[in-house]
Image (tube, rainbow, N blue to C red; front, side):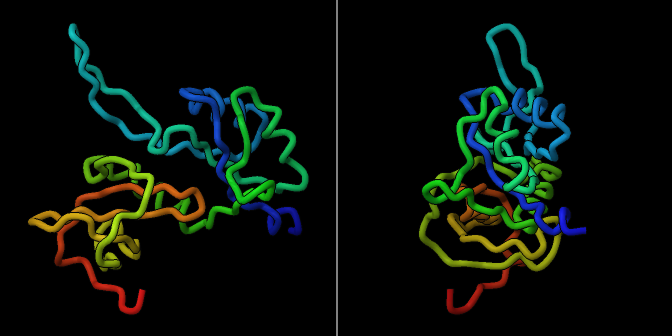
Length: 172
């Protein structure tokens, strides 16, 4: 029981274009790993193909007991470091991992990732697949653009959402 209580999610920064390989190797080491992927169409001069790209380039998420498994993760080929402040890895909230899982289940709503939080009104989503997300409106129109920002990794994802399911968050 104590081992389960020490399990936390962490973001790991990996070498460029090594996300899928690192994810696979972590799973082979019997570690819980999560790599949010989005299916997109890629056009080449001779063909068009559906590909799965990482939602956040350079990041893989692991659910580990940091005291026991940190070295196991760092010894994985392609892993550069844990994301954190100084030498202390930042814990990713379970809620954020669940939100990421929701985002990858709704690929048509996701537009792109953004690396900084743009100015605008903070809102909460009241209904639909993104219920309880909080984010910042970055563009108004028939389908608003909303940025869901993950502070622990300083990354955001822009989604399209109807304005009638948004409620302004007061005092933030």
